[in-house]
Image (cartoon, rainbow, N blue to C red; front, side):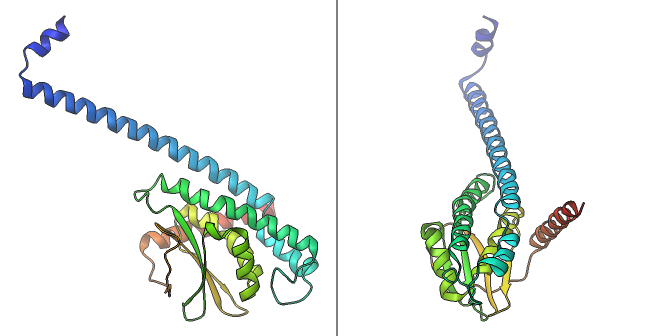
Length: 228
């Protein structure tokens, strides 16, 4: 009764303001709760992925095995591998093809620009011209095709292994294959199928430099942990 009498003593404008303010508070609380859920979901996914790639899908170990056991020649292609090597590499690629786009999608839910939720992996020549663009629609076959056409098998394997940490920290990442000076890099975009002719290396911002420093620090911690 007291609650109703309180509203009886207010004019219509005041009541509307109170109702609107209440609705706004509810919306903000709901947004904060949802945001917290997305952050938690992303962090859990990244931790699980980080653990898996270091134990089961370690690109450094796979590349060592390719050089020492699986390669029939020095062409650095998927087709040059022995049967066991092809099976190992295909399984490796399939894991990253499935999980990297998912990682990017989940991370976008925690960012200010949720429309940037797709990843492209760009292969550049020494003049920054885009030779090949991979996106999730091209699947594992697309990676194998690029490895064979441009002789970049071990480069793609190494790049994919380092990629999740750089995505996690929001760090720019360019991987140079010194056999032919081709470069692998990535972009988080709104439309992965939109084509680009060139991808020049830009001057890094303070935020990007800080992100790269975090990547280096994390890699150093992991290396020290392995030595113990």
